[in-house]
Length: 548
Picture (cartoon, rainbow, N blue to C red):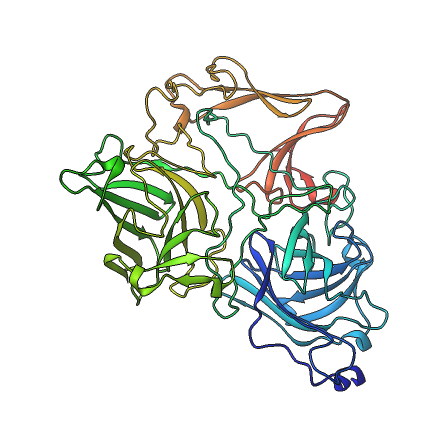
């Protein structure tokens, strides 16, 4: 109380203008009130924070000596069911070693945690220097972030280590896992120390002709109440031996729906993601050459199944900064923007003389949002849209209020001269998906299931899949006579796992790529191979299925 009253002249600003991406679904909006903010103040500063997590569960932000070491750290943990935001000592990896600090040390203020519209939001204000606590520097600091899959403090569903320069407003991702830490809030386990998705789709051919590129691009827009947008750091950290992109590549499917159409005559279509369709037509004035066209324009429609703001961006390199976008919010008119940075005040409307869109509209009716506009393909001082290969960005919100879009964004390449030929940078085509039309000469797909590595018929021969160096999966699908493999009654799979070493081995089957809730076949040398339910990360929660 004496500390707070002595420094009561300091307070957090109304707007938190700095950002750091904590993981793909979480952003820290923050402001630093330095110790020199006002003459006469006591020598201390304030960290003002607002953690927005796109999911429901407990969340934690910890100060640490290094971003790869949890033990010894000090965390602010928010528990939604208890409406509790407190400071904790991180004494170990099990929950009983994560303990609230003494009441006299609970000096946070303006603290809150709420859940709304699928988001968990935690706010706090904290002194930078407090007795018997880790000091938060006004420059660079290492932090740990974790979030749970439920509101009960337990094993974290996500963990990230970051380095943040609070004064400069710069941040780097340092690590997402460490060899010594399996979980921030987990009991020690011998079966698994990290969560790996053991997924092999035996009905899928790896599309060797499709390039998979990792994007480091994140959001176009963030919550206007924080005046910040979220994005991955475009510079990898040079301070850590292990670095990672803040945004993981998402492998999804692009539908090629306009095979054979002339996109200068008919509307061509490109499914950006499930429930989000792009339709476009190139308008070429009579007597003009599309490759070197004066006055060519593109008529574009974005159709989204839901009510939300929509955006399509034009880029020279697939990155957000430096790109230009058409953004539409229901109730307004789509306009052109320049993306000068990730903060909202750096996402700026182009000058009025450059607002040259025609027939621009956005409507949200009957659960569907449609944005339409016509744009000149070549305009002075703007990124040119080519009758050929282009780099585009798409995004949409979770509702009709302009805000952070979470995972609802991607960069993609689109060849306007090749009808329907659109492949997103993060995306691969699954030729076995009946909704996907693939050029006949791109992949040879007979009726039987194929081997990703060698083109064999996996219903006749064993197919191979190298899980990792020294760990091979071999499998074959048994299809009864008269059955179709896609809708098979009685189909089985023969599987072999060959590991170069002596160890227990496991293969799991999951609906979402996560361990908890999945099922696995686990074999231990000297014992019988059995099926298990994976109900958690500790041994006692990895349980054999009933005998029957």
